[in-house]
Image (tube, rainbow, N blue to C red; front, top):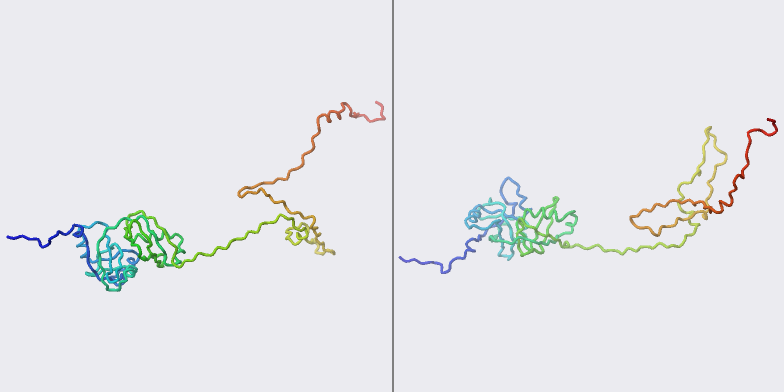
Length: 309
């Protein structure tokens, strides 16, 4: 008996645990079924046939299952995860934004390969429209949307759905690699200026410094005097009108005085100004003793003068 090996070199173990095959790809809208699968377009995962699950389980690959998608005709590639294994044999369903990144049409061929990616630590996104600035908390919205994604690839334009509106974000940078896994990771997120955004022009504000010169008292007459006591006419109980209507006494502008500003005013400090009365003059003790004369008063009698006792 003769024994021989048809392969001169054994196959490396890394290639034995590698999944690689070609599928015809379609958008999720082509997926047959009574249920609406529009949720697939909101994430970064694909739907593969059941035979792929059977083959992957035999290869004993690492979890989570991550794949590299390549369009050999346009030399474009991206990375994704898998959502379900319910597609027809030889077919896989991709989100619409992923087909646009790969420049794929309905029924085009895509190469699917299993990969192992490093866990993400940093990512930077650039909104493709200034409308993204209308979102109150963009980081919270992005964090909620990335829960439907498994990985990120530098250069991809991902689409997120928020408030019934689709926003596109370009992945500008990812660390520690150009393709990273974002499953159960602590990732710092940063934003670049949106595409087409222009910063508003800032006009320098010219502050007018108040002058300390005293104004002309004659100009005070033009000011709103507000309430003036006894400036109105009176009415009688019998209904008769007065012969002469009283006219308000004109105010002399020289009698009007402007208040003195508090130049020691500080922000956040309240000062209560009280009117102080002049204190009476104190008399020296020596002057008081010199003016005092003992028993210098006059007495009074209860008896009236002119009557005998």
